[in-house]
Image 1 (cartoon, one colour):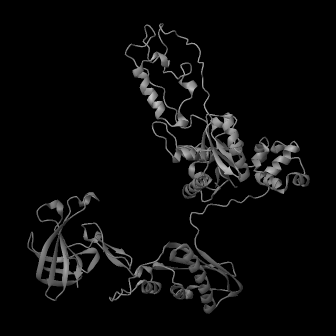
Image 2 (cartoon, one colour):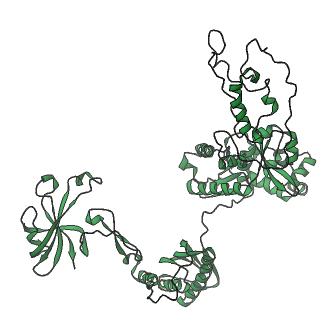
Image 3 (cartoon, rainbow, N blue to C red):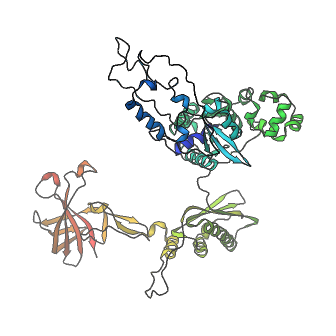
Length: 606
């Protein structure tokens, strides 16, 4: 059962512009597009008689009733605003000026404001309080590409000439459209969907996404909860959205835009019934098909159901029939998903099956050459490669190689695969081979020094490391590096063979350290600060002739409670036979909770 969600962002272009250019506290928006001289504002030369005479009190908001001291700051605020944000003359008049709330400033006894009360100036309008449109240059004229809800209510619509829109609405904010930025934002949202919600997401037009939810909605508590979660996520970003889930991409696309609900989940097999009452443009038909349908009086999708396919294709075109069948589920409509990273890959389809090692090596050489060319164009280097061999019996053989450093050396890669050819079982023959690079890194030019440098260059050990790892295994080659820890067994760890170790402790440490300390028996030592004089380890007795220490190490109390009072006293000792050991005693021989005074072997010098 296929389930597809369509995310519709009707105000994407305008809301993205507002989100990219935050509004200041004063309400100042970005500079609008200058598409010609601004029409003059209408002037109210005859405001009429005031409703309240001068001697009979005054009403809040009447500018003439204020004294000069209180009116001057407001005038300064008006003059400081940009020209396109200054109020009209009618707004500055005493009849239509915005007034402060009367009842918040009045007393309960007489209904008049107190003598010391001041009336707050009218708030400055924020960006979006006036109609806003986006325009783009098309040929020799500017065309409206997006309009805010307020502009749509005033009769402005996408596709209208910008000059016509300015003539209809004089108090209008006009900005330049940025379709590339809108598409980039949709691509980012699609990549987020691929990483968090569904593996298949695609951009649908310039105002929405398709999400293939087949087999994924149970992870979010069902389709209804996923739709609500998606809607709330987009609203937190500051965008208006609608979500519809249906069995086909066409039905989800139409219901998200013309369904009339913020979230709509259509049951399986109800696409035809749900689409019947929608307008014909919900099928994403070409403008020519919509014009032809209008001539024939076809307005709704239900009008197409009883019509034969042949006459319908002749009147509206074959594309209209395909869109109708795709929306109803009669024809498949593939979704081209957004791929976070296109993996470099090379493939060969063989005319005849191959089974010999020489033929396999030749095909591998061709695949490596193609892959290296692709990597060079992208500026990448290979760190891991996977060779897939498809046999005649429909089985696959996988061979992987890795490199210690990013490389594009074709000869070196072929040499690594040559070491793994004996692991390929061709069976009755191999008919197809593909080479992919799932792990890559940026690889550019590297400064290797000038020709005047007489000193020897350090040899590149990466090819040698790769060949040794190919024979002995990837885990056979490593280096030791220091870690941030006081406990010796935690202070050293493995790293890559080409890594530069750092952070070695200043205290002397043995070359070989045991994975786990081993208990000693028959230990003879003076307490509390003397090394042992005799001990037995692994069935053999040792007599100590020299010793150094102790080096006290406390436990890491923030890891476990058992190490809160743990203490180790380490000693370096030399046996009479020449061996040098690194051993320790648990406890400080003073407090019992620090340890039981048992001895352990932890490492060997030399």
